[in-house]
Length: 407
Image 1 (tube, rainbow, N blue to C red):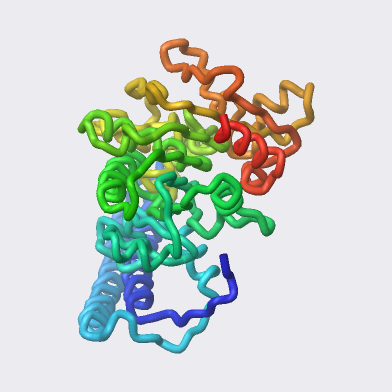
Image 2: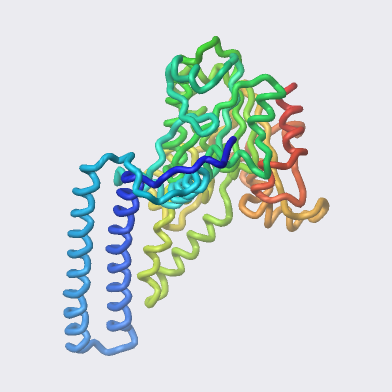
């Protein structure tokens, strides 16, 4: 994939940034006002009329800041919506850098962007070589010079995009497609949405893709990295539930460092959130911990379906209440886990894993036997002295995937 293409930021990008800055200014004002109240009304001081006078005066100031911010934001909103959203604003940035920034932003606050119809929210789409694949025969034929009935779907991880499969000048998808005569398709999605939401959307898109594919579909193969594996499993669950056609063509799924049972980093984030709320002077900062997206909080345990999070405060501490979703039946499922530790260093392998995902989670293992994912021993592979991103470019991993797909 070419990474040399340059593009200009446009009115739509400016519009999205303006909305974020407006909300951020208001939220920071709320935070500062709350912090001011915590300091003035300390639990260690006896309440006095002076304290109420101070917070009353400061409250007027903060309300004025919010009013002016909203007024300016409204003015920008009205102005920008009247302009051509694709009109360039003169700031040039590489296409790859722009896409990477958007992917990270969507991973962290993508649910907020989607809820507020922010132009920076990434819509789920299928892509190939930086081009969106229209879900019609003519559109597909314009994107590909040639297609066949064997589709390889590549699903990226959190805060990433389809171009980042190209890592250290290697792309698992492109090389597999070339050597095994497959047609590569790359999913691009908003990682900040609930995994179940992305799963439902992927289910819809794949059903449509199968219907409009230019030649008869023979098989579908999914290779997924990190969160992408959970979204793929979620999509299959919903597809099977709706008896959708695409699930009949799915033959193999390969997971690369997918946190099937969650990741400790999100659990740490939850504990920090709880800690903030218990200490008087830092309570206002608890709202910062709640900025992380639905997609991120789903990674605490590895939520796949709506039932896993509906009716639950995702920022509160709670036990793992997930509905157990087994590996797809009649689909050969493979998993690859990485650890930064050396072979034989079992303690580091278990605790640290690949730096983001622990070994047991990537292997589908769980202390509760009812939650365990039953990968065949021959369908599991562990790489040592590799981190989460090394999974995308390690040639031993590529060769293992290739071997599995040739079976």
